[in-house]
Image (cartoon, rainbow, N blue to C red; front, side, top):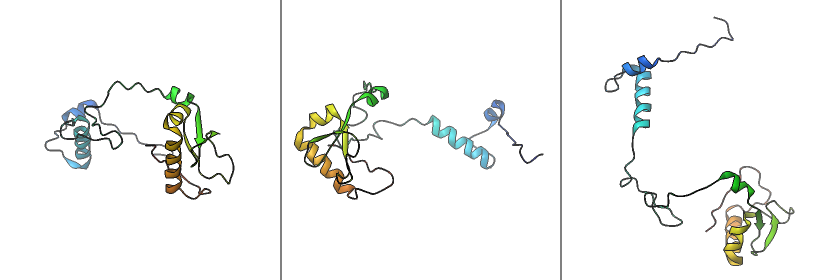
Length: 143
């Protein structure tokens, strides 16, 4: 075998069907059966009922008719605002002295009102106070 050749061994469907998952033989068969069990498990909604912290609704009774479209999300006009609650323009840092901007779609920002925007921006600045910090963005929920 040459150094640049790779061995690609795959189990045939016939071999996979022949594996007895109640008594698997060896590490590979145990891993195969664990993956098979994981994919076939069904979660009981009454046991695993999750409650949303924001709205207080559980996933089992939540509205399932959500029609989200990523293309529409990108078409939204995103704006930034500061701790004074004023909308300052497009979502990007205006100047070095401005600090971290809090951004939302314009419609949602206007629906929050001036006090809501001020509170959201202040919350963001409390959790991410260093304006010149590099690294991954710290996202803060808008209540």
